[in-house]
Image (cartoon, rainbow, N blue to C red; front, top):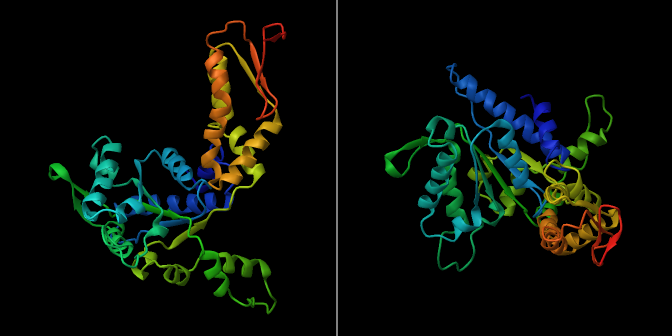
Length: 333
């Protein structure tokens, strides 16, 4: 798949984040090209791991999952916060690789070309007075070993080489924009002597290694994440599209479930806007959409399988009872 093919696939399942999609598509395309070339070339090509910066619920995990599915490579997720809470960091990291091997059905060669997504790496900062578990800084050092590429011994005596495993790290990095604002360039002079505002804006928007150092990542760890993609916060329109447009949209899922029961589901546009507004209030992005939607649809799913008279259900508002009709469109009490 070319980068544009990858983006087209991602667009079927993930709403928005166009710039992040392009950055990820080019990065993974280049990564697997390098892996293929390394097998038949004497030149050693360095790996470029990726950092995703964005608020909770903006689609970082979903994008990585969909990416791995498009490429048909093994994929696992891990939580950096849990690594910082254990006294046995190396064992927990080995367990991540063990899960990757299991995702590859025990095929070591497939696992060695998989993707590992480590979320909440922004939490890996040393906490003053921390009494138990590992410090964030020590976890960063522990992760460095596998991110750089090395053979790791797993249980049952198996070894897995992490050299060609792509590591994608993610986090909200609350406060990073304030750090960026202090380090922005004042201007950019083009080769022709004129100011190029577009280039300046892109340079200023880019997360620089020095920004990550100041935030709390150690230089060695940040240096292993040369590619940075920023995710935009989701507005109401994007949240509505997430519920209705992608192939895995929650509305389409429940519409099919009810169709299997012989019931046609109709939801007014206002309802999706109301759900989106609640999700924005909850401040967890798209993560809350499914919970709100399921709470709304549960009464319908409870009634529909038993009442064979029901041929359709209409929901006009999140705060009104669903209206049921028979096959002739007559209201049912």
